[in-house]
Image (cartoon, rainbow, N blue to C red; front, side, top):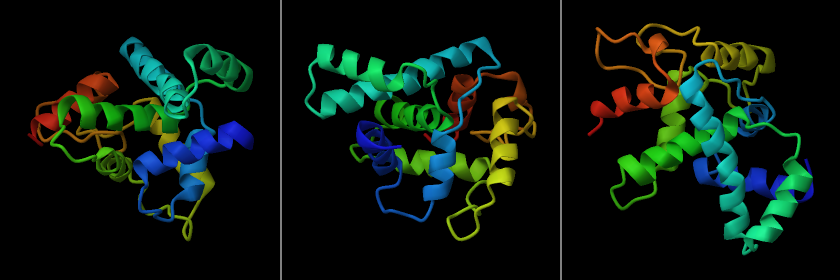
Length: 178
């Protein structure tokens, strides 16, 4: 990564890790892993994730036309990454659903990492092969019925999170947070 793509990656990291916790290896792997859609509704997560690229350009002061040409040049063949999907849903949770006047995108992001059981894999204890297994299992819905191993854990015993899209899992999860 270099140039504007590196700036974009650093912008994403700052959204979800403003304190600079030692998760650079994990975040880079999540960025370099394409998000694979298994349930049709998760196509919306792809759109949300790639829309972050336009938000980044807008915040850099680019015109929509300049942003379009830049993104077409840099990201033409780059699919939505797992990191982009996770940042986008954490951001949507914070700004659209759970907004309390304080930016908490990073809180929701780290709760997802916790549910996926990725928090032990900081830069000092990083195991790329193990992280890839966990991430692939999350994308394929090879998770516990309560959501453990996925992005969101259900507080309800009668809900099987494997049956629901990411958006619906998030709605189940936040019912317990409000």
